[in-house]
Length: 150
Image 1 (cartoon, rainbow, N blue to C red):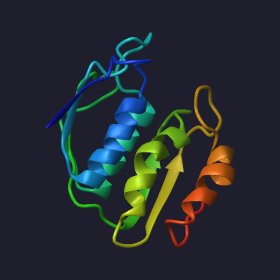
Image 2 (image 1 turned 90 degrees about the horizontal axis):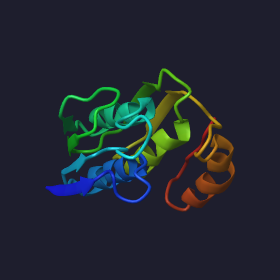
Image 3 (image 1 turned 135 degrees about the horizontal axis):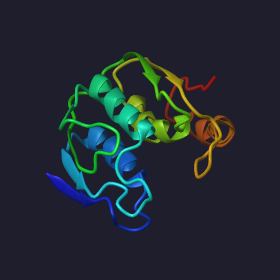
Image 4 (image 1 turned 30 degrees about the vertical axis):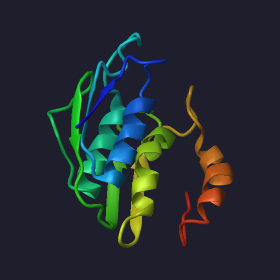
């Protein structure tokens, strides 16, 4: 099991999101402690919870019990599946940050994946959905027959 310290560097949620994506792709389980430890409100935020919950569906992953503010995560991925997944962050939590954990695994699904996500589109300290539409996704067209963001 890979062990990560979430207080390392800027101690943001990027470590969790990238670990989720790479773990799902490689099948390697991980544990991260001290999630967002140096932030005013440490632990998982709404967008982290929904990224984890989405991956629990997309790859039948197993985790410890998680909720807002959880500072430790165990993640054991399963096999990536195609399907339609509805994700509601429930706040203005960032859609683009959720996608940071989901896009890469979904590119390797054995069929079409549709993600229907409700949340924030242009918040602070995040790439906007316009960046994803106009910069990131055109580059990903080399790897995916069809990928779009509406």
